[in-house]
Length: 276
Image 1: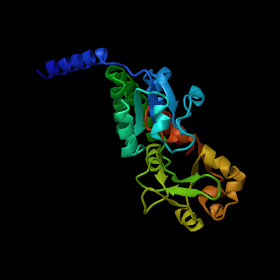
Image 2: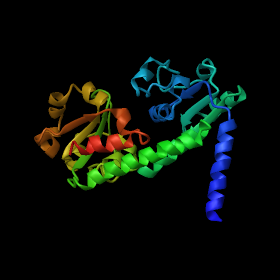
Image 3: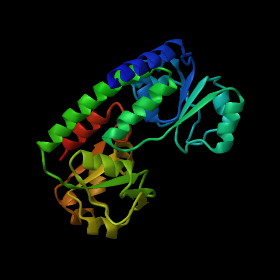
Image 4: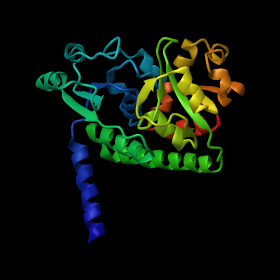
């Protein structure tokens, strides 16, 4: 009986998907959403993206819906989309109302920073695209690749203390605490977050750096460059007093890859773990 019910459900989902109208003009408002839509085969339908979307490479040639992180209803409507995919909280209630009033389908997607969350994220996007079967194919591929990456982590039990430093020049520096995507990816890759005792992000201070004494300092590639590279970072106050500074363990990685938590999660885990 259970098997019969399961088969019937799949047939119903397949039927509904077959006759559902696929979106022809899509706007994606996060890098993870853009990558997932592309992986599901709808890249050609993306007409605009947000400024954080840079992968795959062709995405850089697609028009941006804004020049910064500020989104306006008028800017979105000007692209005449029939579907807007946005991270939860990215659109104000007023903007979402305006878009829906213009006849645009708006789907907000919550992202959970875990291996399970990556699968849920893919399923939500596939559902918004009216292609659940394709979503299940991608879920299977992603699950297999993530499981393989986690097996590699188990075989490399180094567990370094890692401090993630967000920077846009010396004037803007933050460290990632608990309940952040960086905390999650560090743990999945087998590391320990050196920033303890607080959640989210907080301003970087020399005292907090020295007290944390990380074995490795992790940065987004653009943040690393904004501080002048490894030689300049090693000269920052307090860095030379840490194990990371003494051993020149400053690691830069592609920011969009690190916080993807979708189709490229396995790649992020493997690449980060290789830096331990």
